[in-house]
Length: 173
Image (cartoon, rainbow, N blue to C red; front, side, top):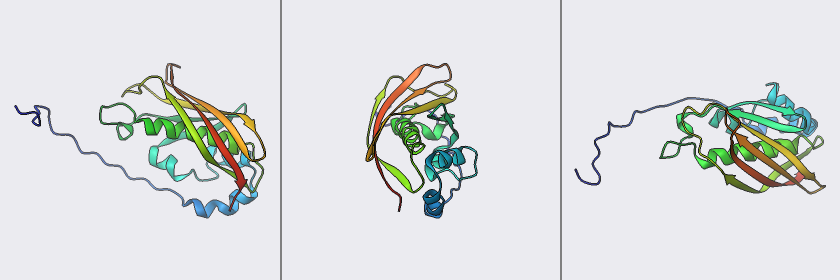
């Protein structure tokens, strides 16, 4: 058998279909809704989730004691080539909860964008590991920037990754 040949079975093909609401359609709501109400609206489905939530299959978003909390059930479409959850999916979860935590502190008509995200990966998320939970909390909010930190744990409460993020606070378009 040559180096390029394999005795493994050919890969199985999978597919999925999903939809989303165009974010531009929500700009009038964003302009007139406080950050807390906007994030809570995404959580209770009165405001559609952002497209990335549909793309990755995020679970419910909630605000708990000032923290943004988001769940994800690992799926095969989250995997990297070696069968564990791709680091970009983990980083996206952590970026989402840090951003939502910051957004929840903002008045109507004010938004944010991520300036940086620093992620520390601690352990892999493997198939069958159960639902992972990301929690983000603001540690500083100034008039122009905010800093938040986040953690991701598995179903057993074991730490998977941590992150810190700096966000630029700005008027929404």
